[in-house]
Length: 265
Image (cartoon, rainbow, N blue to C red):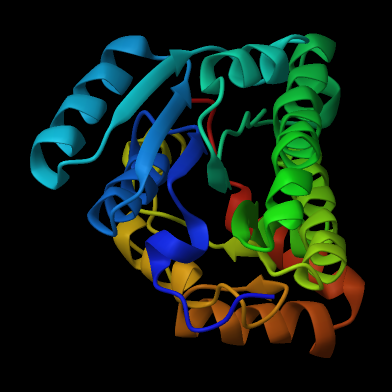
């Protein structure tokens, strides 16, 4: 296991950021580039990816590449592997997400399938493709973006919350398995994030809402220190209250009150 390495030596030279076109994914890409890693940016919106890649290349002198695809596509991981080629990937951010909003019985079955494909299968396949080579090198890292919604059942986000519970538990298992080989994996259970997507779906600002930069900073600071992080002091308190102190039914009902004003974006 390697110790005492700088960010580039421990996690470089290339990072793959899935869900990188805006908001939190763009913030991750920006901070990772600032720290000196080259970037493969993956998302559906090619124009936004190209703009971000150009700006990061100019601002930080890193190499960038983009790949426009849907992480829910059956061949997504094969296309990412082909685009990466022989680049050495030492860091992954699994940030792509699909969020069906509304009463479970009113959401199209195709949207439920898409949530599982993007949020679960996409993250799982990224880990399976890139973590074993990192382990062989004895260094590397992965951020799995989960959600506080996944700490308990969350009405109006029922399927999304379930996929984020999967992501968080996956990250915790990977943390133990790959940590023995010098690879840092962390699940980040973020609360509300002040980005364009939140404004589309929620009418009121939730307590503990953080900027994308704050979530990125706290998540990266927690790498190598444990299997999960809950960014933000208010959110940390809420996570303990909801998952350890309150009866389960009370936690679910509180989440129902917090999500009743959600609307499809």
